Image 1: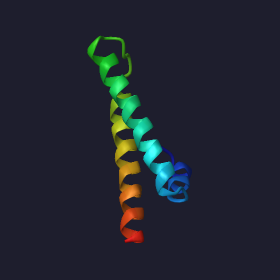
Image 2: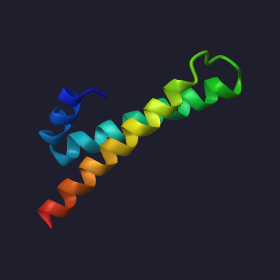
Image 3: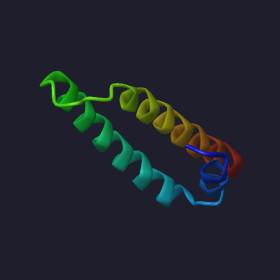
Image 4: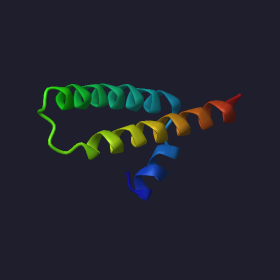
Length: 68
């Protein structure tokens, strides 16, 4: 995830972030399945996808705390 993508995340509302989190989790689950059956060639994708998910969840939590 590049810096400009991180800035775009800060501009999104909670509903958009929640849908991105759901989408990211589904993609991560698919990558794990692909890894387990030997279909995944680039295992670094798992690392990057987990990091992206963590970033999304962090931004979402920051928004929740700011609104509370």
